[in-house]
Length: 472
Image (cartoon, rainbow, N blue to C red; front, top):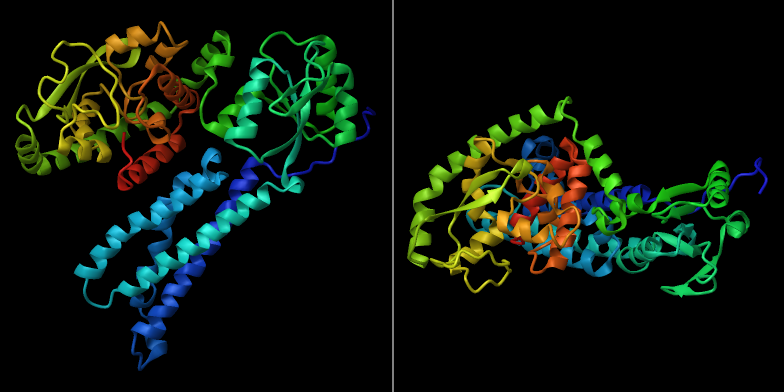
């Protein structure tokens, strides 16, 4: 392939797709707000002086809150594994609309004055219809071959097979996959997920040029042959983007592929990300203290009611204290409102929790869904045992058991445990070792990428999870 030529870029990137989704969502919200506002002006208001009314603060102020509230409820629909799935997107939009009805009914029945009560319902109906239509259209458009990025996967082993399944099953439609490149002669001509293994390094340059490939996914975990390495460099010089399999896996799923990484890579990544001399740590601690003070004030105010409900529902103590492992494996005692029957673990053996755990009381199920049972842990935050955001603290006996079965499980102890975490907003209860592996991948992603921006994202998504009663 001539070094003077370059491969023209085709298709749109993941960030460009998300930006287009936001622009479309913004237009839908503007149209819905405009429809509700117009309805209020024309139908609900007997205006003798329309110009004077339009200049008043009452004409637009109530509608300015509708857009931000809607974006707050659909915040999680921008994650790639959700945004480009018809089923998950439709469910998320309908759930957001359903949850919005709760404050709407409160406004409708209890708010008086000139609040646009019926107009809010018009907004909800309009934004739901517009958003469902736009998102379904967007997903359809993004699957058009012209908008997909032509790609090859370098490596047809375990890592290549894994990322191929992600691209064809979990997050399809981003790439137009032409095949896999592998130097193993036994793999040539075979198909993986209906995608052929085209050949070895010797055909890479020609295939890239003929097919207009714009992305190479490097999915080789071992050593790379010098000939293949040079061929990849030649393609990169022509403008072809080379993406390592772990980086692509992380960007699409928000998790770290621990089964396909070496221990050296994980250790290096974590040591690079845990910088003790930046502003993140003191700012995070300051946020924890302020949040803990506010949270404990809420605990004090609501304690009489919470204690009464818990005691009437099931005999036993109000609070539940349990030993967990904190940063570095140090033991901490975590406080919770009791959500299980008395002596749920009378033998002292740790058991897997589940969404429909028979040991959970009636009020305990509701408290778990809203995570109100966790609010006494604001005390743990105040004394420095926990943080607002971080991996959830686990019991020492379970950690000792799981670290024998799951690689790098103790790596989640590199940072302080948190009241809310990346794994909690992305995954439900861990009912098995397999579920725990997935949750660990989310936790390690957080440790590797932790920042104030990611903490804010987790906090907003946690609020949305609580409002939708999807807590775990």
